[in-house]
Image (tube, rainbow, N blue to C red; front, side, top):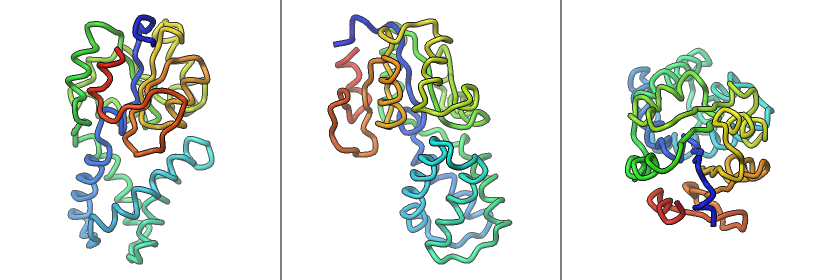
Length: 229
């Protein structure tokens, strides 16, 4: 397939290597306790997770700002749950969430095993839509920062995946051609279709139980990367 062509492997970060859902849940547990927010964590997450997913989609598409994303995803979740909470408290929670999220550093199973396998053979990089101020803290806190040569984020690029510009910037920084590059990520829209639009090989880590598709090979465990590289 592409094994003999690829020299550089680009990874998404959240939901692909860094266990966003687990770390996010632990963060909410902490800030709810500290601010006496008496909503059940499981009840909250059941409503919040799909709302957050949708808001990130709108943010990628440039329909909302970072500030709107951070506030409205919480506001709408609390409103949906019928939990009375002031806008001031929501702003406090929003700020504390961003501050504390990178302090939890659970990784997707087999992340270190796969990075150790790939590092001697390929140049590894990150392309992320996450906010610049916390993505580096996530990488350093989870002890995977040193695996990567270049870390490209959407604020640096001025656009978000799947915009071709961020992928072209990544290729330019890494000084590699698209036909020698592989993108691995969990989002069909942002990672796979975005990377394919500029000619990268792609491998879909299906962390979100998305339906099968014909765009590229799909894996359900990071250890399966070894079969392709």
